[in-house]
Image (cartoon, rainbow, N blue to C red; front, side, top):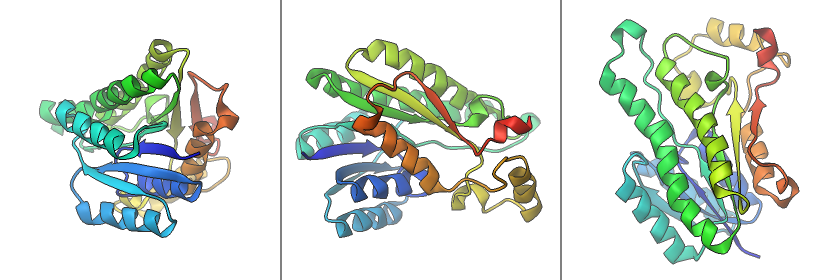
Length: 247
C-alpha cells in the first residue's frame, strides 16, 4: 500500500537524509525547503532514482498560507499524508548581549510556531481518515544541553517538546505524536564553523565517544513512522549516544 510522508526542511542535513531513507523504504515524499531550490531538487532526484515520487515546495513554515498551499498541493497530488516529520528549523547563534529581539522572535517563529502551523494543517487531514504519525525533531538543547550562543534555539526546542505532549492529547486517539531529541549530530551545516578542538570536546562527553550521524536520526524517525511503533505515543526520545550522562 502506498504511503506518503511530508517532511519540512528537507533540502539538507537530517531532513535530506530522512527523506531519502523514507523513499528507500517505499514512501513517496513531499518535502519543503526555504531558499535553496537547487539542493531541494538534488534530493528529489535521489528519491526518484529509488523509483519513488517526490514533490518539492518552497515554503516558509512560519507563514500559514505558504504551509496551507504546500499541504493542499500534496493532498491534491498524492491524495493523503500518512506521516509528518517536522524537521525545519533555524539557529542564529549570537551571545546574549548581541541577540536582537527580532532574531529571537524569528527563531521561535520558524522552529516553534512553524511546527504548530504545519502540525495543525496536516493534522486536520489525518483526523479526517482517523490515522497518522507526527514526528517532531526537537533537541537535547531543549532538555539539558544548553549553549550560551543559542538560548533562543534552546527555548524553541523546549517549546517543541511541550507542543508534542499537547498535540498528542489534542489528536488522540487517532494520531501518534512523538518527538526525537538529537544530541551532537555531525551534519555539514552544524559542524562547518566548529573547530576540531570543540568537536573533540563534545565527542568526549558522549559515552560512545563519537558524534551522531544524520542516518542515526533518520533510522529512529523511520521506526516511529512504522507500524512497529504503533503503541508509542506522547514520547520524547533522546538520540545522543548517552551524552546526557556527562552532565
